[in-house]
Image (cartoon, rainbow, N blue to C red):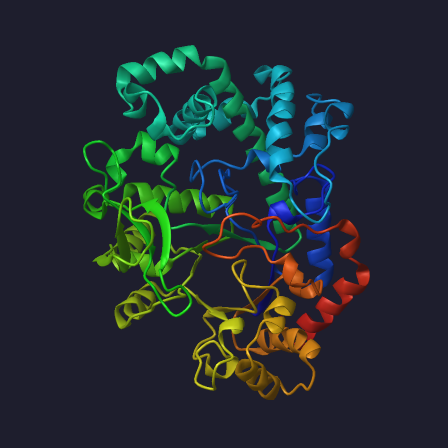
Length: 490
């Protein structure tokens, strides 16, 4: 079945409280998608963010972002009063997330709600804690310790607790019991609200496409509490870290800094941790996009402490074996493979064995007629055709920054004479392609300028801030998108 998809993260939704939330504006956006005939809503990882605000560098692969918890819903539960959150200054720019204001105030409001929370009035609370015990206990302790340590990374804590020694862990659990309860409460409220929103979307005929990063952050509960998962030395420091080698776009490469997995250990467990992670993501989303999928075949390693990615080497990953084991345990998986970047014949062989749809990104295509990202070169319907992802410019920004050669080729290919006609012509190419799913950022339907870009890879600051307003989701725009979907049978 041919479908269309719109990319808009929860943080980018309209809200009066500094950042998008899982309340009424999110439900109204689902209504807009339904009116538009859009069948898939793609979001970024729902995980808590840390320094730099990237959802791809999180304290936990399992936890939800506290910022997305809707205060109005908590008020409806009797846990807040309107003035306790509505009178706060959540930032002066309605089109940008002010992360400092959100950080400064969000937890104060949530602590107030927690002070009124009585688990006996919420029977689902115990069920939630029991079901998530394997990750929730450790995560809540980790966050309580971070708060106690002024937000410092776990490897900067006192040695006994940083090394996760049993006696120190047991003492911390007793000492921080109240804070541990607070972080469990946050995850319970997140889970309740997310499940309600997802159910509403599904009932409206819309699937949620979620995103999981291949790697964990160094400052994460996984790296602190389960060090065997990673390629660490005896002092629990990374031996080598993740990144990408130098290329024409980045002469010093990309130094991500994430700890790398000890794949021999994972293999010895039957890939249990990864299978549990995929199962958890599959429950959270309808379709799971795995970022940097090629890293399962082979991955680039950089010595820990290096300042860039110029020195590094490739190592072999688990390849298809991991996904064979996962499908034996979980059944057929609904996964998108983010197969962008340096793709070797070995990576293609792994992708063919997995059978998951890959990605085409039209913004990458306008070099020459042989480019695989141009629709006439799509050799299968088993792919998602994106005009651009969250890491790309808006189409307007992309057109403004095109070099003369690419611009000339694009005009000829798209059969347009004016630069301003290129963005919608690119959207039509994606929608008209053979790809099973055609996807675009919401910015490209809102005619947003380059300043509305969600993320510029390898940069810190000014990313992840784009926000919409409720007034932008008009009946006229919904009608325009629906016409496009009808024309191209999506």
